[in-house]
Length: 263
Image (tube, rainbow, N blue to C red; front, side, top):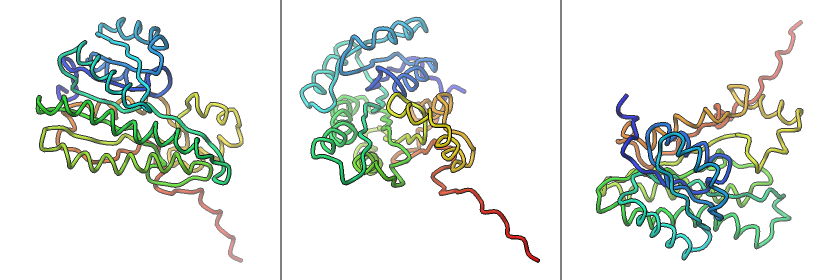
C-alpha cells in the first residue's frame, strides 16, 4: 500500500548503536527511507551504516549525547547540513538502572530522566523547529510498557517512560497545527543488551510468558510494522497516542486459577 511507502523520506533515529534502535532504523530503511543515525560515538555506527547502504539507502552517522543540550543542537545542525529535510524522527536513545527504590541514587535518577525524558523533549524541539516550515513531520517517541504500568525496581525508568507518554500528548497538541504528528511506540518485553541476562533464567522467562496473553516475549519483527505505520502516511490522522506492542500484557492478564472441584 502506498500509504506505508517511505521512499523520498528521511528519518533521524537516535540511539542506533545496538538493540531496538537498529530494529527501528532497519524497518524504516526497508520501507524506503534514507537515514540519519546517532550514537554517543559515531564510530559505533559504522557497521550498521554499511548494512543500510547495502539496502540502497543513504545513511549519515552522527554523534549525539542526548543528555547534553549542546550535543543535541550540534547533531541537528549537522543533520540539516547533510540533508535538506528530515521528515521522521524516532526518539529511541534511552537507558535504565535497575535497582530497588531504596537503593536508587541521585545520580541514577538524573541519568535515567535526563536520557529518556529530557533528551526526548530537546531532540524533538530541535528537529520540530525545522519541520514546521515544511508543514510536515512524523515524530515517534519510544516509551515502554512502564509508560502505563508500574514495576518494582523500575521507579526512575517508569517515571521517565510515563513522562514520555504525557509529553507525547502535549507535543501532539502543540504541533498538530503545523502538520506534525507525535505518537509514542511502547514496547513490552523485548530482549535487548540491557536485559539479556534476565532471559537466561528459564524460570523467570516461563513466568514472564505466562503473564503475556500471547504467551511469549516480543521479537524484533513485532516492532517493524508499528514503527513504519507511525512514520508513514498510513497514520496521518493519528496523533498523541501510545501504541503498546506488548503481546497484551498491559491488559493485566494473569494465569487463570484452577477450578475447584465441587463434591
